[in-house]
Amino acid sequence: PRLDISFTYEELNAATWGFPRDHLLGEGLLGKVYKGLLNRNAVAIRILNPGWQGSREFCTEVMVLSKMNHPNLVKLVGFCADDDRRLLVYEFMPLGSLETHIFGFVFLIFPDLPPDKKPLDWDTRMKILAGAAQGLKHLHVNCNPPVINCGVKCANILLGEGYHPKLSDFFVPSRVVGTPGYCAPEYLESGQLTTKSDVYSFGVVILEVITGRKAYPYSMGQNRMGAELTLIQWAANLIARKDFGTLVDQMLTNQYSITELCRALTIARMCLKGTASERPEMVDVAAALAYIST
Image (cartoon, rainbow, N blue to C red):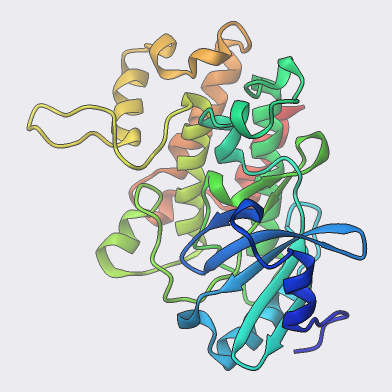
């Protein structure tokens, strides 16, 4: 692959001071991600697991990632293909993931955040969703062929200064298994992935951001048959009863109007249609969220 910057393993090892545990930013199916310092700039360095380091697969990923240029996509700044080692170097996102902020870990990881951002307020959440939607729209509309994210979830929406959102892990090998709780019904039934599968997953993200509750593992109680309630089922029951006080994240009390809430829930409901063809395109989702966030 051709990129502006290629690194040796020794350079990246030195940039992280040997990949110590206290530099670990996260770990996923593809591998571990560490914070490093290159030319006085903070970066995020992913060490790909051996199972994902096939030469052809790696070259394809680097070629695709290197062509991505959008304000709401995390930028690939370099790579390493040293012997059998495969690493990717990304820009560093200083405020971590949306997951960290929505689900309560932010107090421990970022103790110096302004009090009005602990946790994220309603307006900031809507702006983050709108920006993430723009990034996903770009992958679907401006890439040929369209790039199916396969990993739309709060953990993969990273935040920069001013809570500017960027999608990460937006190109992964096709054999990656979708995250439970985010997967569209057609993927669970047949393994089929389309842009509408991403739309479904984005609908789940919208619900998580509004409710402050995780889609997985399921923790919403049980239905009348004793089966675990998913976030989608739990939310649908509350929406039907107009029990918005229980539905919405308790940290957002008095920060939103019912009109704003209903608009956001309508977008989520459309994204979560069981039939893929009934879901909107991301271009429409992005436009609707841009309207809400202004």
